[in-house]
Length: 287
Image (tube, rainbow, N blue to C red; front, top):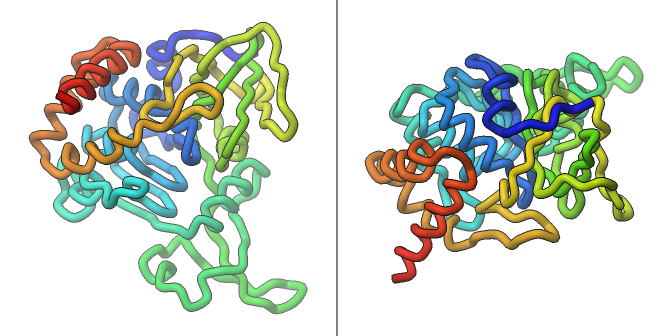
């Protein structure tokens, strides 16, 4: 049975310096609260994995938590670059970040391979692409049945996967619905799994085509309402589009970024504290 505990306890006990960490979520259910707690606890030397690193990975990288990133696209959705990611890659601030870029199809297949216990993923792709020139983990094999040239990539097998979901029951079974990415595959590929949820309920009344992660694949469930903010949780709250726009200016400047991290994360005790300060900042921007 999954352990139902505080996010502070889960991050402290399950995420260690040097771990390979996947924080997944697509458009919504992005685990910002968990990422903030990793920063708050000063975790270091993490090998980050994510199909679409956006603001939370920009924050983790800028805060000095990561030494490498495996990904398939990185940016502030609808706005532009991740400036902390760029600063780490281009100028080594706060320290150098090693990157391995893949296609979306490659990353998705790599998660599936990890969830299936396979050493690598196989896909049609990369013919004519320059990515294999800059990522030597993308290799090619000849199909033993047809002779076709196929691309391969190492499986994603995180030490820990972190996701956000709408609900969990009191035994630790987790329910997600709406737009999903590779949360299921990322969870099944990992050695340990932390799930933050909007609410803990007595019974999961799962809608059709929803995703349920059974309790035996989940290590810890943490009740963190609004834990995906500023992204959204389908059925609970909307995306904070103003913050995505505001982040561009915050992240462009090292001093502004450092001040934001200090005020919103390091000086707050938990995500509830972050939400309170975040609301104050939104009011200040509106004034």
